[in-house]
Amino acid sequence: MSVKITALEAENVKRIKAVQLQPAATGLTIIGGDNGQGKTSVLDSIAWALGGKKFEPTNPKRDGSYTDPELKVTLSNGLIVERKGKNSELKVTDPTGKKSGQQILNGFIGEMALNLPKFMQASDSEKAKYLLKIIGVGDQLANLDREEETKYNARTAVGNLYRDKQRFADGLQSFSGEGTEEVSAMELIQRQQDILLTNAENARKRQMVDDIKKELDEAKKTKEQLQLQIDAVTKNMILRMHDLEMAQKDALDLVDESTEAIEKDLQQIDRKNQRIRENRRKADAQAEADKLKLQYQELSADINEIRRQRQELLEAAPLPLEGLSVDKGKIVYKGQTWDGMSGSEQLKVATAIVRALNPECGFVLMDKLEQMDTQTLKEFGAWLEAEGMQVIGTRVSKGDECSIIIEDGKVADQPVATTHEKGWEAAQW
Image (cartoon, rainbow, N blue to C red; front, side, top):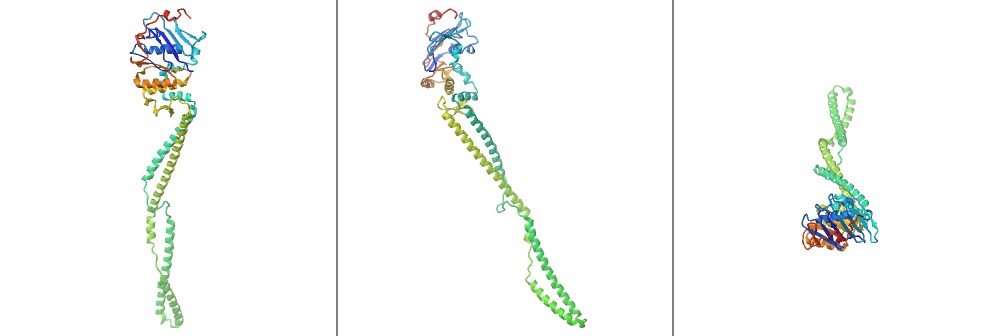
């Protein structure tokens, strides 16, 4: 059972003259009044009484008072906490009458329950650490966050490379029908040489025809002169005529091949290969872009899986408030980070976390509740009551929502009791 505050009596503390308060066991107890009347001094008195020296005001004694501050807080576990005398000495008495000190209070009083601004003013990461401490998944979540950050940074780098490579690939020129493999000039040159050799052989054969004709002409000229050799010449002539006939037949069907197309291809081969190189360059760039795109998609899948694991981890964790979570090292409530929450939502989140940090401490002190409208206050109080929590807060107001009104350091319409009337012992402890 968490410990609540059942009663407060304070005298001559800061702006307080004398205040008696019996807060509601659960829900919201609002201390109202104008500015400068002593509302916050009531909260400071409770914090000092229960929290000890670290919560002692700089100037605890009320200006103009001739007597020292006196405090008495009664708790639901039966402990009575008192501070009074010149040195504001502490006395803690349990139901059996046994006296104790600050140590027993520190065992169940939550420091931030007395000092909610410490949580409210903490950094986003510190707030998240408080929550992770409660749900006990801080290390696992931190590992997932680091893994996600690594994957996210890698994906960002790959995405940038992909976009650059894709823009580069898109900007390159390509030529349809050219392919990506360069044409070899050696093949064309070999074909050209074969044709030239064939043509040379044809020319030799044509020359042979001319040579035979010349020999025949010479034979005719010397026929009369070489009567003695006429038979031999005639025989030779017949043979040469036969050779001529055969040579003419061979030469008759000869067709010279043109190297014009090859020469044109050779002239165009550099241009053709340049286009092919451009095609290959574009294809390589596109392949790299596609590879980077695939890496980006794989990293995105990894990030989504990490986020799924984080969500499962948080859903299984005992969060102190529905809709509360942690994302990227920040507290998130109903989809909003701390700076996106309303003031009332911030107070609700802070109350739930502070309470969960020390479940034995069933109360929270809360200043400046005027940031909530009356409807929000009503809803906040209903939530506190449903959760079994006690909040003692202040509000610049004198409306019906206030439990008591502080005027000039005392409760309005409440008589100021003397030390004797309160039954407090005047002797030193």
